[in-house]
Structures are given as C-alpha cells and as structure tokens.
Length: 129
Image (cartoon, rainbow, N blue to C red; front, side, top):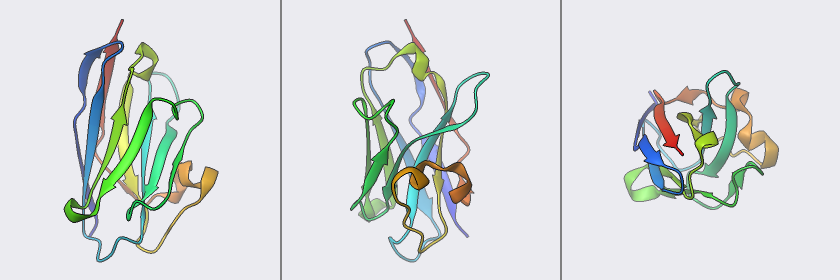
C-alpha cells in the first residue's frame, strides 16, 4: 500500500524560499513518477513539476521552471520541491502525488493529474507581500 506524507509548508514573505518534502512508502522499486501539484484559492489544481523516482528525468510547468526545483533522494524514498523567490501568487495548497509502480511519465503527461494514483494530504504555502 503506497502512502505519501508531505511536510515543509508554511508562511513566508515574498522573495523567500521553502522546501517541501514528500516521503513515499510502499514501493518495491524506484520505477514510478512523483509529481507536485498546487491548488490556489478559487482555482483548479495544476501540475507544477514531476520527477522519475530515480531522479533521471524531471519536468516543469513553464510558469515555475525558473524558480522551482524538483529532486529525489532514493535512499530516503523522499521527493523534494524547492521553491525560491516566492511570490504571493504561489500561495496554494501543495500536493505531492505518485503513480502506480512501473509508470514513468513523459513531458506534459507527467503534469497531468489523472495519471497519478496516490496523493499526499497537502501542505499549505502562504506568501505575503
């Protein structure tokens, strides 16, 4: 049974940084994809970044690729989303998600919500100006 546990959200001022973590359990290999999504108030959830669990490929939404960095630590079975130069418009609930084992997603498909079977509980990021 796959489980995802997120941490690292909080309240920060514009220009600051945060690192979100997502600890995954229940996989028997590194052959899956982890994604990060966010949902701002009044908006639909959107994919911002994804990474193959072994760290060999990553994808970003165009809107965040200059400020967001996704990574993974195989030894800890944990994925990370580093967000730099935070802006008020980054305020949202951030979710990590993971695919079924064996699924390695490519390009725009990797940011498609429907491709992910497992979801974390979400962590709030609030950016003040």
